[in-house]
Image (cartoon, rainbow, N blue to C red):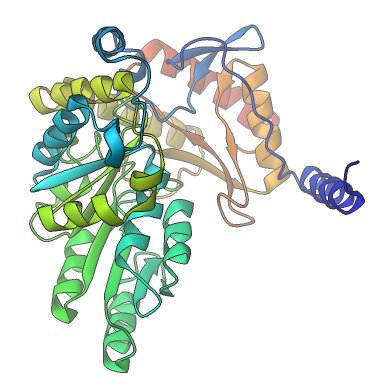
Length: 396
């Protein structure tokens, strides 16, 4: 018999979310997640994928993934510390370290797992973490899991960061202090002020941790935000994902060899969860090889990004202060945002609404993610739809 308490709790909360325009409908994609997708039997221009470089459907990755299945099977068969470490994992991690400009790297099952794993393996209740207020949910959860004192820092406010760093050090309460930030903030598309962050960290002898999920493959000739600023030797933790620009699934942390060795014996997702599949590892390695030998895909991504941004701005949409391909159209009101996204969908453009709790209340937006796989014709079609729906709903 189902608990009446549970039934009441779920019914009340779900009804409240729906009435506030905060309930997220999930639309299954029928086929590959490329620049054009099929949803409910309809073909739509896809502006919601994190597949920045189009590698999720790249034939080169599909070929090496298929080969890895034939030679290594469909699963790793165990956790990494028993006998789930395949030669493919070591090859990937060596390639990641070379890519990120570090001594070593460790791979995980997801980017979310990285932050849960690495932060809690190094920080504890006797430590403090200075965390940007707009950091990703996985950073927040990793910080909470560590039980360290979380000191919230105003977004990209270097004066606030410096004051709070100084106060934390001078309090004498903490054994270790870490500054943690996204490299690229996923909802607004702005870039962290890493040179200033690193200067503050070195002034007070603090650790630095950069979550570069949306920077890897996009900035720094593909190597990410840290490389973009030339800070490979001055950032302690470089976290990245294999699930966005790389086009596959998984995550990694790159840094000094002692750090990676410590994570291999202390980070719980590495110790207690089956390793990445052979196909995922082989495809990820191939993707990184592509990024290390050519900037063609990054150049196309930025070309498409600039084109879409310019078009939306000329139409009168508020795209915020994005410095990256992430292109929000900020509406504010949650219900209006949901309605706008729905009408775009009906007119042939899949651009998902983003509302609380992913962004603060009153900051609803439709987030557009142009990719290297889009053509100018696709983007032109999308802009026509944006203009028509924007005028219809009184947004522009």
